[in-house]
Image (cartoon, rainbow over all chains, first blue to last red):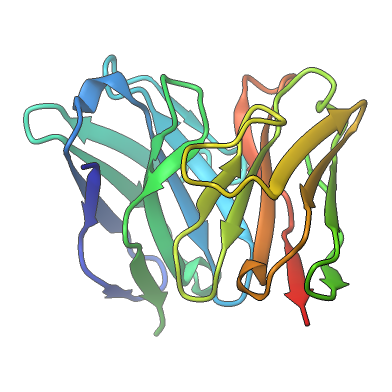
Length: 120
Length: 109
């Protein structure tokens, strides 16, 4: 069965960077895109971007463009999301989610989430 | 930037029909997807491509779309359907970037 296992919780200071990993198993990694979605405490879901795991192409939300980088390691069937210049408003649970079918389709299978806390 | 607008809350009694709307200018040209998120859990896709149900989703969940508005309907809502519901779509004029609606809290009691 599809499994997405994310890296553990992080605590960062303002201005720092964070990199969250998402290890995929149970399916052919390069057939599906990988989305990243975040959710601040008590707030709505927020789409950050996705990567075509086959060719490495990415699309980012304009809100995060220039501050977020999504990559993948095909051999390790792992996707990564790095967010720079962290501020307190970036405190949130960050999810990776495999696409429903091919690239461009919406999030479907979700990781367990990674809590990132930004605090001085 | 592109936005999807949902009501903040909807409340129904058990057995009644709940309707949750999502409006967006690009919806006539793009599909709408609906997610259910219960407290402390990851979202679950309940409707895809406007009106299709993934396997395992109860038949009481249905979707429709007309013009700039999509609707999630829960016919005969049950207490276990109490959750936040989010619509998702893409901005056809912005290189198909994804966007979630603001979310609707459904209360069934």
